[in-house]
Each structure stands twice: as C-alpha cells, then as structure tokens.
Length: 212
Length: 212
Image (cartoon, rainbow over all chains, first blue to last red; front, side, top):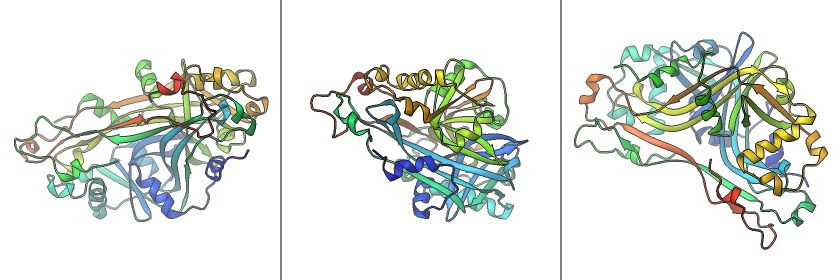
C-alpha cells in the first residue's frame, strides 16, 4: 500500500522545491521558534532562535556580539521550523511516524540597516502581542545598538505537512494490534504576573488573549 | 541589573563548551524532535527529524534513499534540540525573552551497522512506548534494508536552560506595566483509535500512559 501524498513528500525533504506561499506562511506563522543553520569553517551549526515574518521576508535577532549573527550575516543560511502534531501508531514498527508541520527556507541572510531595525523589532513584539510596544518603556538607543536583526527574502523554500492516521500493509489490518494517533499540542497556560508588578496594574488583553 | 546565570548563558550559545551530562541528557530526553544540521557543497541545511538517546550516544534514522542521511554519514553534524517553555514579558521590549531548554551536540555521524540496526530501532520505539515492539508485526528484512540509522557519540555539546521571570532595569520597576510569564506546554491529547482497528482490540497501557 502506498502512503498518501503528504506523507511521501517527507522523502523529498532535501529538495529545494517549489512551494505554495500561503501554506508556507501558515507553517512559519504557527510558531515563533526556529532553527537557523549556518556554516563556520566548514562545520554546520543549527541554533534555536525566534523568527517572525513580514510579507515575504523572515527575520531573527540577537545580541550584536552573537557569533551566530556575525557569521551568518551575508552568508547562506537555512531556517527551519518544525511543529510536532502527533504520533502515528501503526501495526508494524516501520509504519510508525509522526504528524507534523515543517518549513525549510534557504537563502542569504542580510543585516537589517540601523534605520529600519527598530521598526522590525517593534513588529516582532506587536505581531505576537498586538499593541504591546505602545505600553512599554521606549527602546533605548544603546539597546538598539546592542541588537542585530537579520533578515532573508523567502525565495527557496519547502513546506511539508504530514497529517492523518496510520497507513499499514494490507495484510496487517487483520492483526489484533491497536493502531491510531496520539495527538500532541502546544498551548499557553494562564499567565503568571511578576510579584514586582505595581498594585492595581491589570493584565492587558494582549496577554490574556494570547494564543500560540 | 544583571540577568541570572542561566540567562547569561544564552550569549554563549556558540561555544562548544563543557557541559554537565545529566543536564544535557535531561534536555535531549525531554522531546524526540530535533534538527540535524549538515553541509552539502558548502551550504547549510537543518532537517527536522526524530532522535533518541542510548547512554552517551544519540541516534536518528530515515529512508536509506534520504540525501540528508547519505550526506551526513561520516560527516560533521550539529544536532539541536529546543523546547519552548514560556514567554517572559518585561517592562521594555529588549528585556522580553523566552524560557526554554536547548541542547546542541557537535560531532561526526556514523552509520549504524546492519547487525545493530534493528536493536537500535527497537530501542527507539520501546523507549517511547515500553513494550510496543513486542505486540507489533515483526520487522521485515526489506524494511530494515530500506532504513538507515545514524548515530553520534556525545562528546562536544552545550545545554542551556532559561527559566524564571522578567529581569528589568531597576528604574523600570516603577512603571505601571504588566510584566510576568506566559507559560507554554506541549502535551498529548486523548489517543484516537484507527477506525480499522479490529473489534475488541483495546488501547494498551503504553498508549494510554504515554506522556511527552
């Protein structure tokens, strides 16, 4: 029995193939945690970091002292997002698999110019918690100086979504083995206020309504 | 105000530093999803895959046709695990951060020999669901042939855990801004039986008791 189309795409994960922009954006926007892979002295590194998307660009940031950011500015990178959605329990070991959403972006990272940096970072925060930047202490020029933002245009990418139940060999359906899916989800729990919050400060809507 | 020790370690994410094996194992064992970074023709790739640990070795697997596995066997790789635990909401944009657990392993991947492959894969499945391999249809030699298992000894690694509440500039604690933590958790939901399960087949304990 052959696996469904979405599952067979797993085998083409290495292809820098064509993609449907909307499906890709959906995966990229479904989480803010990614891995950025880069090469230093011929050796591979994958560093977990946070990303955000604005139109057809993706961004990530960190300390200006970060070796990862210094080395990957102007260099080729691979930005990978993956979200585990469940375990697919089949009737044989080899048909076990996972349901997931994943995206891989390939390209050359650029350093965001100083005069655009603050706007990018504000969009990052406000993208997750609408209006949050308006209620915070304004950014300090030294903080901005100490932060590097990298970006990449989305040109070469691959998005994969694996969903659904087990697909077993025909004859294995006769076996008295429990098969099915164990779904997995990531969710936010009730926010925990800082004990040092001033009296009377209430939880804003952008915190209360936050979903991941 | 200086950040707590665990948080300052974020800035040293690039270092191939020393580590405490137990802390590292704990992070590696807390999820089965990782990214493996490797280099093909000088370009970086990070592919999401599943890993498992046996003692001081980590393993991952896939189709023997996988370009990723072919190219990274005998080559340098970086295996990265990252788990998001929460959003740290501070009183200024730049003091926002995330709580997370992360591990990076560096080394040369080796191909697991044919006579050890099945034992490794069985340990992978039984490690997640104790006893599951005993109730499944036995592996087929063709399935084993079509699967490559790579492994790596854990020698160079870095583990980082960031936890706790916001750390703001001293003067910002006077501001009437809500600060705190939005915790995030990944959890399993009730298992969904395959509609093709035979009548009378019950959910085994290794499925019912499964936790991520």
